[in-house]
Image (cartoon, rainbow, N blue to C red):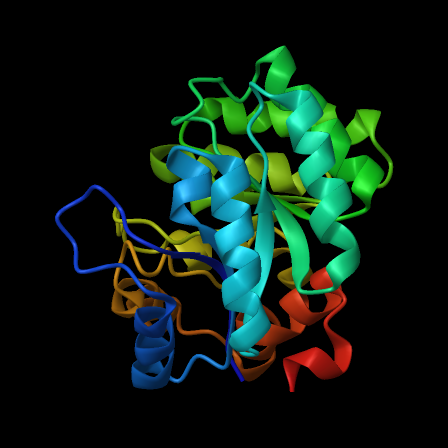
Amino acid sequence: MIIDVHAHAGPWFFATDVGAAELNLALMDRYGIDRQIVSASEAVTYDMVAGNRWMAEVLDVQPRLLGYVVINPNYLSQAAAELDRYAPTGRFVGVKIHTTYPAQPLTSAAVRRSLGLAAEAGMPVLVHTWDDTVMGLVDVLEEHDRLRIIAGHMGGPAWRTAVEAACRTDRLYLEPCCSITDRGKIRYALDRVPVGQVLFGTDSTLVDPAIALGMVADAELTELEHEHVMWRNATGLFGLGEAAA
């Protein structure tokens, strides 16, 4: 069983062969990925309302996919409405917040308020992290008892800082997919944080899943570690239950 907790559907402006959700499924089949939690690239990069609406239509016909409700920190009232609209459907199981495209740093008040909305919705939130500001998520988690955050990309080049942050709270999860394949990242994390706080993600379809799977192979996981990282932790965090089977 493999559950990919960090993926996208729809076209990007990068020079990659991406577009329809059928590509997500083709890559899942190629690499043995059973379930994938996806956000609409349009919602991440341009229009959260239109992107989330398209994502909902895709989820209606693709049972192997589950969704993130994308919220933009610049439009908090609209973001709250998006959560009210899609959280009850059961097909969206988490929240996605990017920081680069909305031009809102992870430490900004707008991002903190967005994380508060996710806490109120009771949904895990995948946050794009790419520098040492990932440590600031520890303070945010202390402000919201219900909040659970996934550090997408595990801080990028600041992955050691992300590991340190996860050592300080059991509600910060590490998802290490990245185009920067520094040797030993996953092993470094698992040697320091509880095995229940590490998740598997690919950044598909923007990045080929082969990169994330190669990082897992490099980590030489034990059988127990592999089970938790590749699916069991995601099942518990997102409350998937029978939906993961």
